[in-house]
Structure formats: structure tokens, C-alpha cells
Amino acid sequence: MFNRLWIRIAITFALVQIAFTILPIGVFIGLNRLEIVDSSFFEEEFTEVFDQANLTEEQEEIIIRAIIREMRFNLPRELLQITFLSSVIGAIAGVMVSRRLTRPLRDLELGAQSLNLRQLDVQIDDSKGGQEIEAVAKAFNNMTQRLRHSEAVRKNLLADVAHELRTPLTVVQGNLRAMLDGVYPTNEEEIAGLFDQTQHLTRLVEDLHELANAEADQLSLDFEDVNIAEMVQACASAFRPMAEEKEITLRPELLGKLPTISADRTRITQALNNLINNAIRHTPANGTITIQAEEQSGSLEIRVNDTGDGIAPDHLPHVFDRFYRADPSRQRHEDDGGSGLGLAIARAVIETHNGTITAESDGLEKGSRFIIKLPV
Image (cartoon, rainbow, N blue to C red):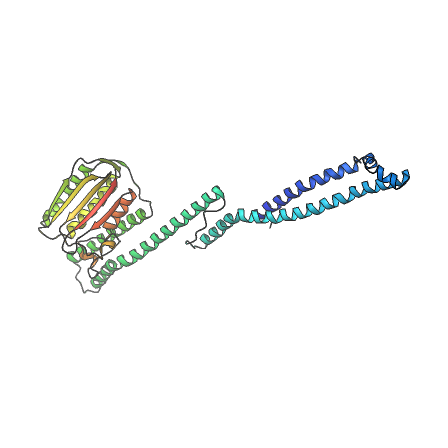
């Protein structure tokens, strides 16, 4: 029981109170024991009274001794009563103060026990207990928030893996079973189809792993000076053959003098590539995709505009969600091999650079705009 901090504080408080109260009494008793009180003082004070009473010297001496004796024994008794009362009050005050001082630590203890039971929604009051304890409480609350976030990422990842891997695995398993049963011929065409499914699975697993790292703030970044004009030109050149194959016009537009920013070149390029690839997949033949870059109000803006399918207003808030499809009836393998994670990965990458990414559209069949904003 005495290991409790508040009990030790209360006992210390009471002992100090008792010590400072008893000390004057001890001094007084010691002085009385030394008989510092002089009887001549009472003889001078009561001379007139003694003379009027016609008392003998022996009687006077007896009365004076009685007065001194009464002072020696009664006054300490009153002080002892006061001391006892003040000690009780001090002990009660010590208990109350110590409980108040150590309550935040008790809350921390209960919070840690809740975490041990995997109750990650625990939060403690970080406005009591002094600056040091408040700092510990805030750090504890931040830790629980990060744990909740990591747990949510883990659960979402498991749910997404189970949902998105089920279809391609079922296809592979069904085709292999049909080959073993002789329903499908074991030829190069069937094997190529299975190989395509395994490639899709590999790409899906890699994208899920990368997205999980980004959402858990564990994505490795290698910052360097990035020339935005060169990066935009390089991305446009890389996708131009794909765009020409679909008869889509793809052109970069560098507006004004572009700054050099500190960023992870590979990650920023990956995010922009995902936006361009998404625009190509949703833009029909004879459409146009424009990649614009300019500096505005102290930030760098990269806009990917297309004249493609467009996005309905009720779907705009969800376009960056993982595996989101505006048309639920479409299967993932029908989307030109996309994993459904490109936009989610782009958002995660940009946010790790303290930037933002948004989507805009005037409606279906009216094209869309994806806007990246990065600090300069």
C-alpha cells in the first residue's frame, strides 16, 4: 500500500506539519524544565495583593509556586490540543493535495492498462497535473491516436486484400481445375491468360504494400532538388506512345517560370504518372489530356486535365478511396489491368510531401481535373 505515490506524499505532508507544530512546544517545555520563569516577577506583581491579605511569606511562596506550576502544565496542554488539531487538518489536506497531484498519473496507469487490453480508443485529460505531466499525457494521447490509425490501416489492408484477391484467385483456380478436368485445353493461349492473372495479382500486392506503408507514414523518401519542368516533360514523353495508340492528344503546358522544389523525385513522378495513366484510361479516342504546371501563391500546382468520362458530383469525394469504382458493375480486370489503387497511392505520396491533391469535374462526359499542390 505504501508504494502508492499519493500515500507517500500525504504521509510526508503530515510529518512535516507535525514537526513544525511540535517544535515550539518542545522549546517551551524545555524552558520550563530549566525553570527560566522567575518567581520574583510574581512577587513584584502581587505585592499589594499579598499585603492586603496579610499573608505570611510561606503562604505567598506557596501561592507563587502554584501559579508557576499551573503555567508549566496547563499552557503546554492547550498547545498540544492545538497541535493535534492542526496535525489532523494537515494530514487531511495532505491526502487531498496528494490525490489531486497524482490523479493524472493514475489516469495514465489506467490508460496503459486499457492499451494492454487493446482498447485503443482511450484518451486521458492532458490539462491537469503541471507542465511535465501534461506533456506526458499529450504524448500518450498522440501515441494512442497513432495506434488507432495503424490498426485501422491494418484492418483496411486485410479487408482489401481479401476482397480484391478473391476474384483473380478464383479465376486462376477455376481455369486450372478446368484444365486438369480436361474441360479447357492446355495450350499457350490458356497459359497466357493465367500468366496475365498472376501479373495482376503481383501488381495488386505491390500496390497494397506501398499504400499501406504510405498511410502508416513509413514510406521512405529521398529528398533532392527537383526541376519540375523537366519532370513534367519526362512524364508526358513516357505516356505519349500509349496516348497515341488510343488516338489521344497528350501535351504538357509549362506556365511561367517553374521553381525547383525539394522532394522525392521518384515518388512525385509516380504520383503524376498515376494521374496521367488514369486520365488515359478514362479518355476516349480523339480526346485531349493537358498537363499544366505553374507557381501560384507560394505553392506549385500541377494539373492533369482531360476531356474524358468525367465524374458525377456524388462520386467526387470518393475518387481517392482505394478500389473505388464509379460503376460497381465493372470488374477490376476490365479496367485495362488497373489495380484500383493508383489514385489512392498518388494522394498518399503527395500528402507525405505536405501537399494536397484534389479532383474536380463538371459532371459525366465533361472531363475531369486532378490538381496537385506542393509547397515551394
